[in-house]
Image 1 (tube, rainbow, N blue to C red):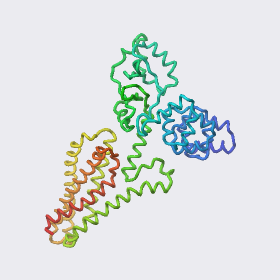
Image 2 (image 1 turned 90 degrees about the vertical axis):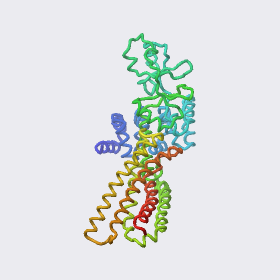
Image 3 (image 1 turned 135 degrees about the horizontal axis):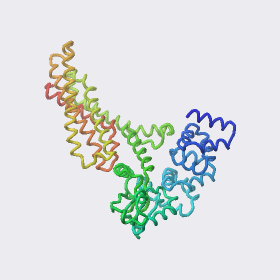
Image 4 (image 1 turned 135 degrees about the vertical axis):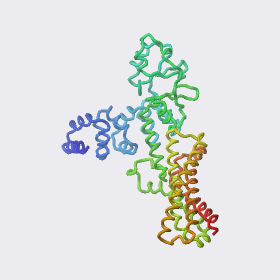
Length: 453
């Protein structure tokens, strides 16, 4: 990479435009993207001198903040060329991120038909499949033969997003089936399309959440899927490259939420310091107020702590064990839900597994805690004459708190999903805070019962 950067810097220094153009056009588009990241001050110049097709392909794989910066610095002519040549789905993705006033200006660069198409795609919900789809695809009728199909593909396939899959519709535009191109190429030319149909099309609804589309692609191993309305009319297609992009965004957003912050919406190094603090401070305040309840809980058991000060030694051990088990369970369930392995309907199976695993994990830690106290008692008197009661208190508390932490961490994401919220909001810090407070209550309640304090 450094060698490539050095070569480009040398060409820029020598002001050798033609050689720079030839050099950039010979690179892979991913390499040009890396150059833009390394030399951002020259990014507009790179886009200007690239051939139009390569400039479009580079522009469409850049992250949005970089695209936005480029649009502010490119010439009006180049912007018009880029906007016109961008695939409809990529154009929609760009417009949906830009300020409305900017979109109004850019959309004027489009021909009337493309302008109408762009406005139609922008009319769908922000996170819906409709925003991802492209209207560029190949459709055929079921009474056509293979000769007619291939002739149609030669005529219209060039402008299609993909010709790997051909879509069969009726006279009203209703989707009947989708056929892979290899099935058409490997049969007799006289074969009718109806003979190749299995009448089992897999499609997305235009109003489906984009996250649901990710799971459909994953389960069906497709490069493209048709998009229909509620009446089954084919409106467009979604290709796997767009789904991979959305999957990456969803994954990044979930990871940030699990860490106890709002989604950043842009790269960490690009976001302003004020916005970064604003994204993080909300959750920190909520978690801080939640943790203050631990002081309230300890105040309630102040008399018991005064009678058996030794109990205070184990508070960090107790609450951290519960928080850790809750964070583990929460992370596992959120990941399983994202992959489609677990749904709300599986709540009882999840609860049953977490009860068993929580008990096993709690017993493991409880036994270790008991033996730890026993071993130290052999060498010191720090736990006093009632060390057995202390050991049983700590052990049983660990069993109860780890069990509760596992259940809380596993069930909270399912509950949030059930009421229509993002499961990732049940972040590890949130679960840990919840278990910290309730864990103290469990711990001292067991201590009161066993030690009679």
